[in-house]
Image 1: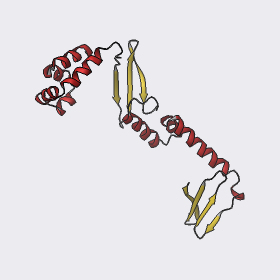
Image 2: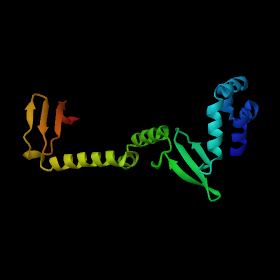
Image 3: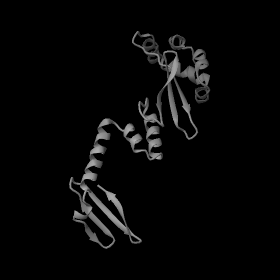
Image 4: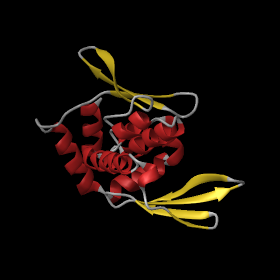
Length: 179
């Protein structure tokens, strides 16, 4: 298939390329439009064809499954069978920015802290962990903190530099903001 695609690019063969396109791609671009695109981008497409034939080119077979609530499972073909490369339910190894954002959405929807850490870069995950550890340490002895109370609002500066704002609603104190 890759060789046929490269040959069609070399020839500027809109019919052959159109026949290789998915139904969704055919709805987006008509056969005559594809012909005009090929004519206008001849040099760039010839470079693509050469790159496809390069000994350094890597062919990867991949399938995406879209599940009930829009979750995506990506499978890769290797050693004669498909293997899970990435799954929104098991974040990691996102192949595209859109897939990384989909994984982020899924872990947030599930309220999964462990899943969230797997979607964050190592640097961002470490920073989040440090911030949370600093909050936990700073709140080790809440009664010993110097809490400023003004009416139904309160604030406290924690050891480690965090500031916590609280608000009383219907007689119950809630954390209103964390810095």
